Image (cartoon, rainbow, N blue to C red; front, side, top):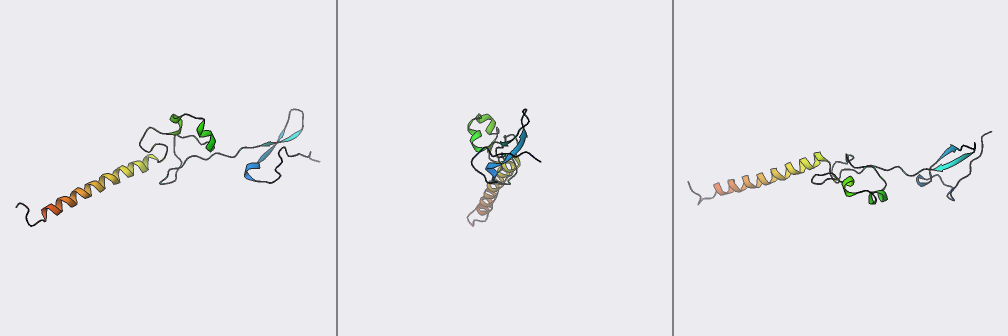
Length: 115
């Protein structure tokens, strides 16, 4: 018959914060080891993929690491992925170009413009 294992904490429910694993000690007893929650990788705010170069930690652990480890040396580093930053820059450039083209066409269609 299997040995019984008693809980080490007062919470008896099978929740995500109360995950446990049965471990055999060197003395031959079976005891519960309470496991921590799994960390998730920070995601890009636009496309939702995991940000490469930033470690996956629990929220409180980000306070203990340096700023160098929390960001990437780029515009929007640590918030957006490289592809989304590239598309933002391209979109902003094309919008500005469209404004310039619109202004040029408007100036050419004026009746008092030079011929």
